[in-house]
Image (cartoon, rainbow, N blue to C red):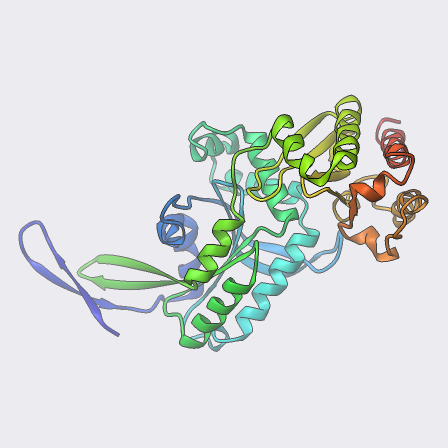
Length: 377
């Protein structure tokens, strides 16, 4: 272990020796209290990441509506609403070399599938209560009053649904084996990001210095992430101008879906994709928010079976199968049975096969009727 040197105001030179953290809990507490130690400026030098702590020791389920099977050390979100999963290990823990990687991938895969936004918001609320602070005030300060709070939470939800998450391995010393694995995963995974943060501690004469260093970024990985980053929110004009590339049929179907959404849903949320634009209609009913699908300028519509299965009455498998049957009644390529637990995509060209989109919209008229019968009775 090396050291660093501090020159004090009186000119005295203080040699600070590296020291291991006394326990993993101490290490975790430091990160929870001082999130800036996660080196957001090293992760993104153009737009340094800022961190909002959602919770420590947050449970991750292994099945829908199931009890937590694992416990993630920290969940943060950054200013763009990207969920950031943090797992802390001391270098003396042999699991830091390989086992922690499989553990983190388990967390991320199941978080994307089984963490509804309400769970994340609830954990944030409890964290704020434990610290005796007002959650909305914390958010306003975090967002620097430039974003709407509800829009921010919607960004968190959209990022989670898209698998746009960040995985951070944090240790006082990152072993070479983990560095290589992280670099490989970060280069291959998109839109997810995988990084390691080494946080060394130096102490002397009652002083403590913490020095973070980020590993895992390569030129190729940075190029890929930049190509799939977050842009400005799309608008109706931009969306349909971009969709025109897919032809008149796609524009006709996209316009019908958009106008139906305006008439029948509570609002429309616009995506921020750089490559493809998107809009997601949202319906508020009975204290729940429903997102039935997302339409993209790629000419595809993704059906959100995976996410509204946590909402009444579609938590019942039979109800999801009814919707699947309605969609398959006109689709030339039938969606598989397992689609009711996923996010299947349907091309606008195929939607046009159902009476130029009429059958598709009737399926979602039924979807709304079933929701209202359940939540407004």
